[in-house]
Amino acid sequence: MRQSQAFIPTTKEVPAEADIVSHQLLLRAGFIRQTASGIYSFLPLGKKVLQHVETVIREELDALGANEMLMPALQPAELWHQTGRWHAFGSELMRLNDRHDRSFALGATHEEVITSLIKDELNSYKKLPITMYQIQTKYRDEKRPRFGLLRGREFIMKDAYSFHDSYESLDEAYELMYQAYSRIFSRLGLNFRAVIADSGAMGGKDTHEFMALSDVGEDVIAFSDTSSYAANIEMAPTVDSYQESEKKMLPLNKLATPNQKTMQEVADFIGHPLEQGLKTLLFKIDQSFVLVLTRGDHEVNDVKLKNLYQASTVELASEAEAIELLGAGFGSLGPIQSVKGIEIVADYAVKYVRNTTCGANEEGYHYVNVNPGRDFDVTQYADIRFVTEGDPSPDGKGNLQFARGIEIGQVFKLGTFYAEKLDANFLNEQGKAMTLIMGCYGIGVSRTLAAIVEQYHDEKGIVWPKQVTPFQVHLLVMNSKKEEQNELADNLYQLLQSKGITVLYDDRSERAGVKFADSDLIGIPVRITVGKRANDGYVECKLRENGEQSELYHTEVIDYIHNAFE
Ligand code: ATP
Ligand code: MG
Image 1 (cartoon, rainbow, N blue to C red):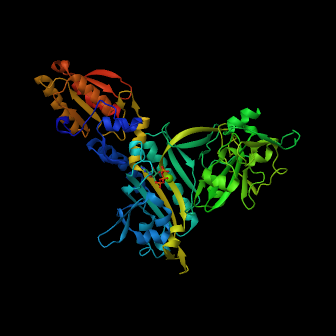
Image 2 (image 1 turned 135 degrees about the vertical axis):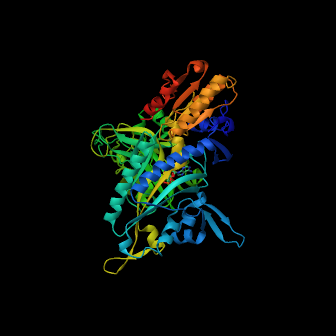
Image 3 (image 1 turned 90 degrees about the horizontal axis):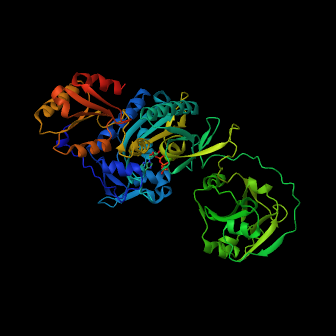
């Protein structure tokens, strides 16, 4: 492509709305433009990279025997009513009405559509297992669309769905898809990890998320420093390795603690470490209030709470609710003499605290020398806190470390949730009607593109990995007014293309400095500059990755490029 004819609007300024590198660079290098919050156009370069990411995905899924198809974005509300997700998906689901006032959703995902489609076609075990996939635009009215392509309201997803007559068959497909995902993300050059993830409320069991490691990631991965164990921190269980205290229980005492609100303030006031305190939070789990206790230095993990109660919603109660129910605001809550009938759930670590401190359910007062069992009863002890760095790894090998990750994909054993709701059955070998068993598998295609830029850039711009670069070679002519430079560059342009090499040819009448800066910003792996030595047939070749330069005679260029792309 001749750059003089290309639409590549590069800019020097860092756009004010972009606060992470991938967003800044994709805007500055002319790959994307924002149309509205969380909604983007892919400009020609962006579209090319997208296509390359999609090609890798297609190749790996086709190799599994998955069928590519395309489903509609516009989905009738009735389907979502049947699975209960018209309500459960909440305000993230984009909704609209047609001229006859019939309701539709803009597809946030396609379990409903695919299941209702195949239930009429897949009526026999003989046709199973089967996997379908599509690469398609999804809509989610995210609460906080941000970070450019990382969290959009309109984005591109690869979604796949597999159907089975047994759980063994689902397990096999899951394993194959897991391996295909590993190959896809490796081929895309990403530094990633597959982690154990939360299966949420949709009745599934096993699920893994694929995380591109990055400091801007919204997820925290807990992984063992000695084994391959890795989990989303939401899911990492704590190991009960607490020590029974040898200290004597001291008499309970109520103390005035004026203006001491936070755990740290109270601990400092009383003069003990944070972990000696007891944290009391009032939660609303589905419709019920529950008092949740952890050690002062631990944090409540609401995903674990949600799973413990098999609840659909878990949220902190408001301070007004705490005052009304318990008689005190957030800084003074505690489990002693709390309201009858309110359940108290405590983290395992709480069992081992001795002579701890907690709020007295009276503004400005705390109890000291509090001991669970003696001074209050706990309805149940459970693992309800986030693991902390240094905790023992759940697999018994080593200790946990943390890293941040961007969720680029997820594989999920759904089971029969959707098939049951949508009445999707098949006849087994004995002619008996059975419910279809399902798996689903997503990749955030546009998010993956941004994750690649997060991992591949330097201070000058993007540094595209070879597999996804929009072009293989950036050919620059330094002074397009010089006949000999033009001629050599034109010839090279023709030659490279005839060898099947993709070339962006900067034939614009811009200053050399502008061309170099744009070239670094755009980030194509190989740059070939035709300049002063064109007279003698020499050009300058440079690798974007490491800045390595060499002067080569023009006939050596093809070999140089082939080496670079080996
Ligand atoms: P998240 O937790 O980040 O909101 P999710 O778990 O809701 O994502 P899935 O339903 O698993 O997302 O969708 C499959 C994939 O689609 C995700 O792994 C992610 O890569 C991508 N994805 C999800 N939401 C967005 C979004 N708002 N913008 C871009 N990509 C997204
Ligand atoms: Mg997910």
